Image 1: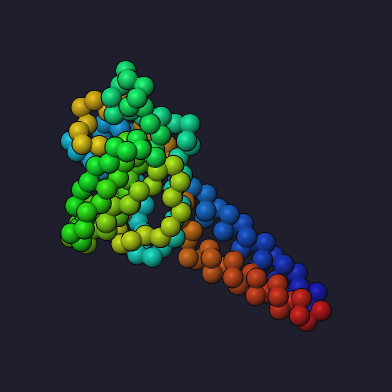
Image 2: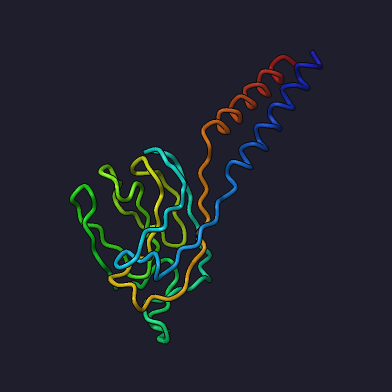
Length: 179
């Protein structure tokens, strides 16, 4: 009886630790000029997602990039410049409007089944709208005068870790019920 309780506790702790490691974020640097929507190339994060998968992306709001260097009016956070919208056509034919200077994502860029653009800004907590690789953009109409970069932390809980966590909880509950 004591052995099963001990094993249940060890399983629970291991599952908690595994989930903690799985959610540790991957940091990527998005360059305002190189990764501009226009005249730039999407930043391929190398992170593969499945439609409906949960993810979080955060950027420190103290980080600034610019779409007009030398002019403080054009310095923005990853949330972009309020009132300065720019539109693009999504793969599904709808129109997406984002604030110039904002951090924007798309899953599966360059593929026939690419997901629609979505605003990340300084904090995104949501679900993948398509399956494929997560790509990030500096949302702007041209790249020639963009300056700076922001570091985004992308966290994607792994399904295996979540399953281990659930099994650990079940083992702990079963052990407590027996006692």
